[in-house]
Structures are given as structure tokens and as C-alpha cells.
Length: 202
Length: 261
Image (cartoon, rainbow over all chains, first blue to last red; front, side, top):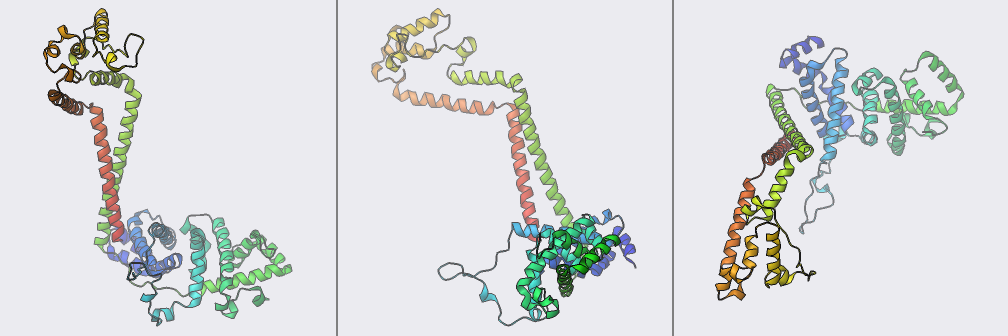
């Protein structure tokens, strides 16, 4: 069954058809949400919210790129989740000392041995890049994630953020400039072919 | 934004050039400039590397399936609809309250002013309603003889000033209030004259009677005023309570909804 047929079936109330769409898009949606949010829990929340919104708003889909339409909803879900987390920052679990004072950090909870996930996914370079992405303003972050990380074209990014192509161009240029400056601080982590300093490129 | 002699406009063109988003004419011009500028060439290399670094980031696969069940959608929709209903109802009640207030302010002179003056006179003559209904109230400030700062003479306890007050009131054609009659000389108030403890009276009342009488009339006044609120006040209070109650319910529902997320 192709995408449009699944959409039509979902519009008729076929939940299985809708879930097949979910399975087809969930990696793309989660990855985008993860790069925008910068952490897995928040990305999971945003992804789930995004799919619920997609289901509820499916009747408003008026053709065109379904992927761009889904990305627009993901973008909004990410913005909402970011704002929700800003309003209610997550308090880390911190143990109390005998006198009732809180310990300064929760390092006691950390297992010294690296987890398999850490070894495979959370390389230092990955963390450094994610750190620099997180430093960007939301409006720059979403564009750079869509175009440079997810590899979407400007048109899709423009449809996702509901801004003209020119805005995508200028936001992307600014985001790249900021990322470049930020990553200068992590140059030793970059493979030689990726190093961004003037000395290396000269 | 200018760094290493490259303007933001050039950075923007460079960024679009890498992605192939420059128009043909613009691209040719930019390539000509690029060929003659070492700085632009370096910037181009840096941007290409950055793009490569970002594209090399590992794709994070979904940690679980995000498929929906009918219960998930229905439950969320019901909660959200309920919360929206309460929120709008609360806002509507608040708006209505504001409208009633505004209407009362605008039309106040038509129907609340006479009511207010009536309430004032009732409050002033709480113990003597009949007199208030028939005649205007007469108020004497200080004693007539060049004002001695009030005190016993002004209060009419000493005799002469009180007589003057009563005479003045009678000349005006008004009836002397009972309270003043009580304070008048012996022949007009036999109760005081016959009393062996006249000097111990406080405002013409025996100490053992006074407290009781005052407290009774006071409690009656309070209860009658509470009941006599105009209907518009009841409407306002009702709307206020309704807006507050619905608003609190909406907040509680919203916080519950957030906790379940």
C-alpha cells in the first residue's frame, strides 16, 4: 500500500493503516526530535506527541509532501516540549547528606564503566557537535538539523518551519557560522579531514 | 557579522552555493569572486567540512515503536476537550462578570444612586426608622454657644445646650429624636429623673440594660443588611464564584494531563 492510500485509509478511521505510517516515519521523526531536543527522553516525548498530533490533524492535510507536513508537526512538538521543559526544568536526583544538605552532584549514581550505548553512540565528537547544536537558538537549530543533519532540501525545511526559502537560507548561514565558531573549541576531537581551523586548511 | 574580511552576505552566498541554491547568474558571479579570493576559498573549505561533519552524525533509531492505540487517542481527546470546555466556560463567566460590572458602572446613576442614599440614611438612623421615613434628620455639630469643642455640653447631658437643640429642632418643625429626648431635662424624660442612679447612666441607659439593647439592634441590622443585597450583587458574586471554580478545575485538569505525559 502506498503512502497516499495509507493516509486515505487512516482518514477513514483505519488505525492499522495509520500505524503503518508511524512505523515508516518514526526513525526520521525521532532522529530529528533527538537532534533538536538534545536528549533521548525529551525526544521520545516529542515524537509521541507529534504522532498523536498527526493523527488528530490528519484531516487538515491538503496534499503535497507528507514528509514535510509531518516534519512541520514534529517541529511544533519540539518547540512545545522545549518550552514545557523550560517552564518545568527537570530536577536531577540528588542524595542528601546526614545533616540534610544536598550533595553537590549526582555522581554517586553514575556507573564508572561505559555502557554499551556510550561506547557505540555517544562518542565524544557526537557529544561535542550536539553540544554546539544545543547552543544555537531554537529557530537556527531546527533549520540546521533539518538541512545539515537530516539532509532535507530547503523546500522541505521551508515547509516545515512555514517560512520562505530566503529565511531558510539566512538562518542556515547564521547557524553554520555559529556552529563553526563553537566547534573550533573541539578541534582536537575532529578527524584531520574535518578540522575547521585555518592552520589545517592552509 | 564579519570575520576574516568576509561579510555576512558572502557567508550567506557561500552557504547557498554549497547547497546549490544560487541562481545561475549569481553563481557565476560568485565563482568569479571565489577564484580571486583566498579568504573565500578558505571559508568554502571550512563550510564544506562542517557540512560533512554534521552529515556524519550517527542516525538515532527510534528506541521503541510509537504506534498509537485507539484508547490513547480517545482518552487524550476527551481529557483535552473537557479541559478546553472548563477553560472557555471560566473565561466566559469572567467576561460576563466584567460586563455586569461595566453595565452597573455605566447605568449606576439610574438605579443605584437612590438605593445608595436610602441605605446611608438607614444606616445613620438605624435605631429610629420611623423618624427617618417621615422627616429629614437634623444634625447639630458642637454647641450653639460658640463651640466649646464638644464634650458634655455638646452632647446635651448638661441640660441647657440640649434644650437649645430641642427648641431648634421644634422651630424647624421636625420631631425631636428619642435619643435627644432621653438626654433632655427631667420633666421630658421621667425615666432618668425618677431613677435613683441617674448619675451612673451611660447615654441615658442603665449599665445593666445598655449592652443587651445595643447588641440586639446591632445583630438585627447586620442580618437585615446581608439579606437586603441587591440582586445585581448576587449575580456578580455568583459569576465570580463560577469563574473561579471553573478556572481552578481547568488548571487541575491541565496539571493532571501534564503529569500523565
